[in-house]
Length: 351
Length: 228
Image 1: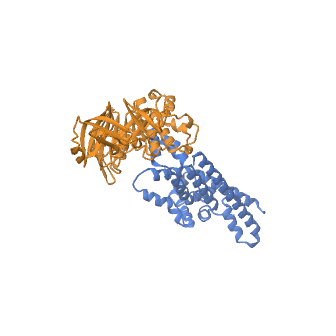
Image 2: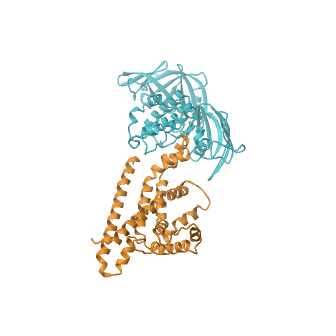
Image 3: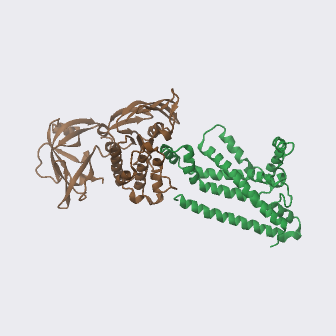
C-alpha cells in the first residue's frame, strides 16, 4: 500500500498539516488524545474534506483540491473500524455483516463470506440480535463487516480501547489473522504502545495535527520505555505447555520457561515487563526465580534515566532494563555474557 | 349518547382533516428535520424560528394571517383564484390551518429521533458503500421511526383539537367545515344542548385514547425491531 498525503485542515482549534508518503501494510498512527488522529482518518476516508492538498492511494487520486477531484466515501473503498462497533441496531447480525458486501460490485467481491465467517468464528452469532452481543462479539462483527466490503485499505480508529484486556488480545488475534489472510493493509490508530507493538511495523507519531516522527513500533516502545509504567513490554509466544509440579513448562523457541499462569493444550501469548528481568554477570548460586536464561547482550539503548539491554537468548530476543549505575558496576557492554532471572509469576498470559 | 347527522358529519370531517393534515405534513416535516439535523447552511436559525413560530403565536393570529394570505386580496389567494382554486371556508382551509399549527410539533419530534442517531453509524454506512439516499432509507428512516411516529401522533391530535385558526380560515359551517371542537363551541352557547355537547366530548376522548394507545403499541413495536 502506498498512501501519499499532502493535506491541510483547520477544524476547531486543531490545525492539521500532514505531508508524507506512507508505504507498508501495517502502519500505526500514534498520538495523544486530541492530536488529530481521528481527523486524519476522516480525511483519508473522505468523511471530511481537506482545505488544501491531495490524497493519493496506490496511484489513485482520492482527493485533489488543485485538480478538483473528490471521490465520495462510498467509492473510496476505505472501510473504518471505530472505537465502538457501530453495528446497526435495527438490522440482524447477518444483515450487518453483509451490509458492505451487498453494496460492493460483484467483480470486486474477492473475499468469500464463508471464509470470513469461519476465520472470525461468527457462525454462532449470525442468528442473534445485535443487542444480545457482547462488546468483543460486536467488534468481531464490525471487523467482518468492514473486511467483507472488500476495501483497499482498513482504517482502525482505536478499535480496542472500549474492550477489557482479555477481549483486547482476542480481537488483536482476529485483526492480525484477517489482515494476513486477506492481505488488506491497514492504518491502526492508538495511543497504546502495547497495541502498536502488536499490530504495527511502521509508526507515524503525531502531535497537535503535525507529523512529528516516522519510526518503527520497536523503536517507539524502546524510546518510551521510561515513560511507560510497564517499561518495555516483551511479547512471547509460548507453546507446548506441560504440567510441572503446579507450574507450566512452555517451549520458547529452543528454550524452556516455567510459568505460573499457564493453560494446558494451547499456545499462548504472554507479556513480560522489562522491569521483571534481573541480570547477573555470573551464574547465581541459588535463587528463587524459576527461570535462569543464559544470554548475550546484542544492543544497549538509553531511555531517560534507564538503560535498555537487548538480549539474545538462544535464538530469541528479550529486552531488559537496568539503571545506569548497575550497567557500570556490572560492566555490561554489547557481547557481554549474562544470566537473566525471571520469576514464573512475572509472565502475564494474554490469551 | 345523542348525535345528530350534523354531529356525525363533524366527526368524519375532523378525522378527514386530521388524516389529510398528517399525511401532507409528514414528508415535508421529515425533509425539514433532516435539513436541520444533518445539513449545515446559512440562516438555519431563521428556518428554525420560522418553523417554531406557530407554537408561540395564538392560533387566532395564525388563522387571521391565513385569511389575509388566501383571501381574494391576498397574494396567494389571487394566484389561486386565477387557477379557479378557492380554499377559504372549505374543509381544505381547515387542513391548512391544522398543518401550520401542528407542523412545529411534527418537526420537533422527528428531529429528536434523528438527533439520537450516532453520526458514526452514518459514517460507517457511507464507508461501507452506501450512498446518502441508501443511508437515509436503511439507517436514518428506521432509526428515527419512533420520532416520526410520535410526530405524526402529535400532529393528528393537534389537528383534532384545532379551533382558533380553523374557525377564522374555514369558518363554522355545519356539514361543510364544522369539526368537533367547532360543533361543541356551538352547543356550549345553548344550555339545552348539553347532552349533545357531552356526546361529542365523549367521542373526542375516545378518539384521543385510541390514538394514544395506537402510538404506545407501535412505539413498543419499533423499539423491539430497532433492537432496543
